[in-house]
Amino acid sequence: MKLLLINPNTSDGFTAIAQKAADAYKNKDTIVKAVSSPCGPLTLEGYFDEIISSVGVLEVVQREKENYDGFIVACFSNHFSIYAARQLTGKPVVGIFEPPMLLAKQLGAKFSIVTPSPRWKPLLEEGLEAVGMEHSCGSVRVIGVDVEELECLEQGKLEELLLKEAEKAIKEDGAEAIVLGCCGLAGLAAKIREKLDVPVLDPVASAVKVLEDLVDMDMSTSRVMSYSPIIPQKFKNVPEAFHVLYEGRDSTQK
Image (cartoon, rainbow, N blue to C red):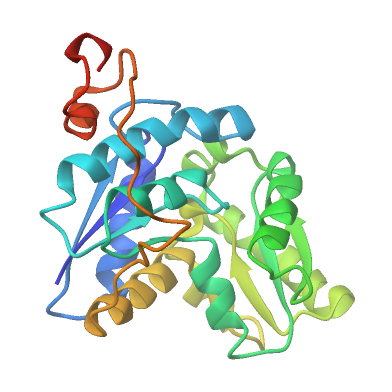
């Protein structure tokens, strides 16, 4: 099984974090390759960055869709490129937002998300509603660190901040499980779990395990309505990888 994990930002440091977490949890016969987006912002800090980052993600999926069995979009949000990528390929495409929450629901009635930046809290709350998880989430708590700062923050300090907010979520918000809410937090779940009495879900590891199961069960994305293949139409100046999608149209409009 070959899975491609796409970091929607251009930070190779985040990509390396995701690769390490994926390798730690994948099945021994699974190959996971993590890549950074070929274009876009260094980190995603809000709506604008998320939209801009989608082009790079889709370009990678279009180029590699014949070479892998499934795809992971490694942004902890309801990233729109996930849905668009499902129109490019029938192979399973998952994010790192929904999988850890789905698994957390099997382990406790309510979970809380602990995420770095206050800027992401409203986006995550909107995302929870979009995927129907708002009633299962006790809270979205933030540690007060912008995403870009994560790579510079000493790991011990980062773990301390995460633990503090996780403990508040358990005591004050009724959380029975904790979801780490950022690709940059991948690989820290085990250490946080050691100091708590509840499950702690790693977003990248969760996505890898869910995608492995989908591939193992020979599942493919429904092509009936929502994720039906795109309709060829005239476009100007789209990335070269997308040109084949517009075959039969005026080549000057590709």
